[in-house]
Image (cartoon, rainbow, N blue to C red; front, top):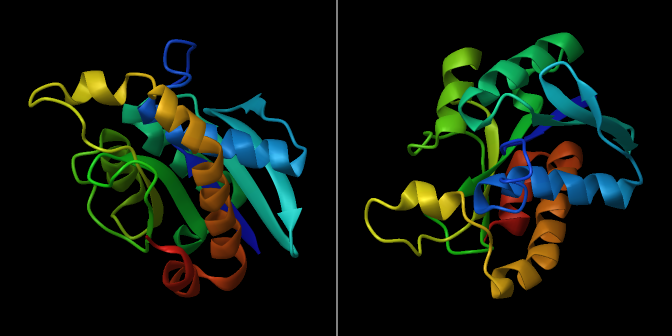
Amino acid sequence: MKYLIAGLGNIGPEYEITRHNIGFLTLDRLAEQEGINFSTERLAMKAEFKHKARQIHLIKPTTYMNLSGKAVNFWMQELKIPKENLLVVVDDIALPFGNLRLRAKGSSAGHNGLKNIEQITGGANYARLKFGIGDNFHKGHQVDYVLSPFTKEEFNMLPEKMDKANEMILSFCTIGISRTMTQYND
């Protein structure tokens, strides 16, 4: 069984530790825990490992957030991974900071990365792990907020929250989405 885990974010040092890059940061932590490194491949940074007889492919699209679907679709086709074995890790302003919610499908809720994945892969029927970043911004300042760094307090909480997200990713790949949602959703 093969799985594709896509962590969304933007490339470049100016975005590295911003809220919008929580998908990248979460997969970086998983790769570190698995003792693997990302390499630059077509449209993405890519790494892979085996877990309980599952082949897990991690990608961090290098297309920038708004064109994430291009990389996700390419790697699904290249690796012959069905959509039900795709999981997208993404930031979500509708959830309080650090809350994690796994969904089997859903709307993009205005998230440009998810919107692009839906457009290119043909629908919203793919799993997503939403990582809450909160909504502590004034009306009209959403872009500034998601592209800003974490507060010191949030940054200190990140390792624990990312570890839980990574448990959820491995659970998705082994026991499936329904049981993982029941066991882990906040």
